[in-house]
Length: 328
Ligand SMILES: [Cu+2]
Image (cartoon, rainbow, N blue to C red; front, side):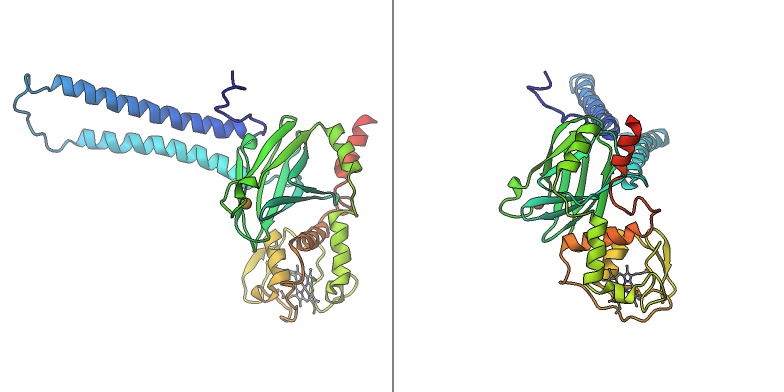
């Protein structure tokens, strides 16, 4: 029945049920009050019809009534608020050990890059049961990453990273839409999310042509663009040592402290003058216009890998390692 009459998209992520639960509650409460109001209108229209009550009495002021219609809606909306925030906070905070996929949106396609360096266009391959963190940005206008089966939608903006995460729970192929009107072929900006069993996923991953992990590509760019002349790992260079920077608080020259997240790294590379690290001079040149979105993501992945214990730094092969250790 659901196949021919798809009122609801399939539920294929860990969070899908919670989103639907809240949605059903909203619909149920709205339906209840709509019916109640219509029933009461009808009831009072009959009860106080003119032939029985020719001269209605005006009633003014009633504390119990005022309290009732203030407190009951307040209580109900607080339930929505609390439940909604609970889901929102879960959705806004990716788990630490999530696998990461970088996405670049542009008119009118989706480009994906995995930690292992494999690339995909308009297709996103994922293993079932793993937490996935999407790190996304746009090359031109605002787009929006929307996978109905995961109950996930996140805007993708030019000039900064936005993130979202989910855990696919069911193998299958799901729709990916752009949910922000972005020009002539907006409606054609569609793709597929292909969720595979772990073994099939491993096979797919190792079959794809890859030119080294994302972090390794970033490391190469780090040399080519001359970052390494200032950011050294052996001695103190003209720029800070980037080991362990990611995820840590950074003290700035103006006394503020900011956490070095993906957007901080992005800004450090494109507008180095925006936040100067305490103890350093603003001598870093801007790389705005010199690095593509993809290269920027590789650089960010590389700097992030410097903050992780060895092994993860080598790239996205820890999934493969897990896969083999399970079979031993
Ligand atoms: Cu779009």
